[in-house]
Image (cartoon, rainbow, N blue to C red):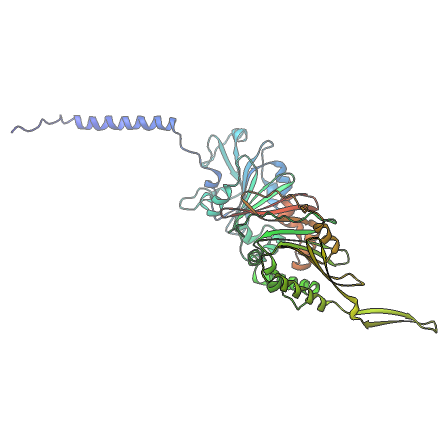
Length: 465
């Protein structure tokens, strides 16, 4: 048997060299045909040290936000167009900045640093660039909250991502005090226009029912109104957002108002919440004298609704004072003022108006009390007969026009900035003007608000009325 012919000794190295040459040529052509992808801003930034990322920030926006982010005044932004700008925090607690120049702004820079490419120039404050693109350091693009939230942020729009890191430290003292009242510190995605702003964060949906009953449009307009789905669950979920200390404080405030308006014989948790169906709305207006006007509407599904309404009226009757001030002129010319007990000062009336069954418990002299009206499952409760008649006499009831963010709307209403500022100051001892709302939201005194959910993301939208 003859052996196979052997290749010449020099042929094998020649074949290997030829193969390497072919592969090298292929790699060169691939580099031209399929250039390596340029890293995005989020891929360059570190997840841990990045506390804020502005996308498409303009010089006008930088001037607007400088009072809340003073470091923006240090950043050399191009005069035209938008630029990505990041705020980072060093280990010593100090803040730095990084700006990502593209397009004409990048071409105008003659010198190049290691992170720069033909279409991207990265510049930063002292020590900030050293935090970028480090090996084995997770980037912002790998942060779960960032990936989830930026799906809602169009690349052509301007938006701001605030990491939970900034929440933990606080950019301003006022914001730090406010956010200390919260139990958790989520990352936020903020988008804004002239009269509208949205704030998104990762959160489970506060109810799967689409809001179909916005608050009614009333005269005079309430200083605050809110419509919500799954009232009992929503109440519990909202309370869970606050720290234990802040939650106790708010619970005490609500209990105090409840006892002043309804009394102590009925319970908000066991007598009011069960009355509320899958949807409810409440409107309130505080007068200059401090008295609170309210209207609550719902479609009750409670089989014991009549018993609970009866308990509410009995509690109000028990809470109303039967004492009245009586002034008399004596024959001698003297005037005498006395405080007398007069049960007749409390007036209880049941009446029928068309399909509406009405009940009233009030003081005849001051008008304090409670009015309820039912029509099938429709239920209204109020301490103001004028508001109650407005919604009873109009069918359908005119309601607020809300423009919620993406997903399923679950809450919404109207709020007066002055009233909100007073609530924060009087109850939580906080100054509202330094919070996110005053920085990014509409500038008028009254604005509409709504909450919507898509997937795991909740979006709060505020816009001018």
